[in-house]
Amino acid sequence: MQALVYDKSAMPWDKTEGFAKREMPRPVLDEAADPADGGNVVVKMIYAGFCGSDRGIWHRTAFKGHIFESLKRERRTTRIIGHELVGEIVEVGSRVPALYGYRPKDIVSSESHIICGTCHQCRIGQTHICANDTIIGISRDGCFAEYIKLPAKVLWPTNKRLIKLKVAAIQEPFGNAVHACMKADLRGKTVGVFGCGTIGLFVIMVAKALGATKVVGVEPVAKNREMALKVGADAVIPLEPSGTAKHGWAADKDVVKAVRAEARGIGVDVALEMAGFNNSVNNAIQSTRRGGEVVLFGLKQGNFHIQQFDRLIVNGITLHSVIGRRIFETWVVTRNLLEDKANGIQKRIHEVILDGGDDTVVHIDDFAPGTFAAKLAAWPKLLIEF
Image (cartoon, rainbow, N blue to C red; front, side, top):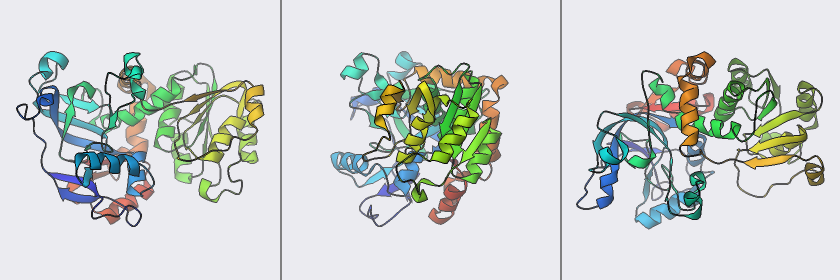
């Protein structure tokens, strides 16, 4: 089968970028050799979403340790990338129909974190922060391939009559936005979204659907600002790209002033930080009113400097950190939001973020690193078709 891979033996991490298209063995179920296959399925891919995490691997800025350590355990050099998917089940293990109800021809998406079920977090219901999870496309082979083998327990049934397949492929990252927005009560609140990339754009739509009265975006990229307004932001404030910002780690005073002006002069009730840069985190905190809440989703490695830390405490600001999705609570809300045509979310995802599914979709037969890189630079979200 065709697959997009990172091969550490042929692609030195610090000297290359991108993925290679390779012929890889098609996964099969063999319960005699591996009894665990009784609970597994093989899914034929329809669409796979290209995530911000995949961009990090493409540019060699993230997940090196996870990939290298897992490949060492497996005594391999090649990892199939990708974790956002929709596909059709073509083979099921013997225990799957009775335990999970899945059968061949079912259309499914998938949670990307495969949990252990036995660590302390899993046992008390915090499965989204499992201590022993493996991540599809990072610490085990992923979905940028014609077929993928997965545990049936992580699958999510999808009704293609209610959710377009191109939208269904990105339920997993949309779920990130749902989880972030559910960390605080947004009803009747003014909300700031700091970073309007793909997940930030999702957050704008989810926040409005959950009752936010005003959503203010902050974004350096002009195209993303335009998209943010199209998906429902009431205002979008420009700022310098983090890599060239004169303010370094500190908040941008002009941005903070502009956000506060949009929020009755006192600051937003809830700030959602979606970019992960140090100055963006400080922008979010400084733009939040006394007694407000800051949701931290953006992720970058290394140490961060919190500006005026004492004021964070004196002003009674609450910080929330968010990772992944609550399994499967977040998926239930995600499905309901996408299937509800009245909120317009699915339509805006398809028409604005995916541009109608034309230029943002690349068939795996047509994959070439150079042209794909150009599309990555032009669009916040791409899909791979199979």
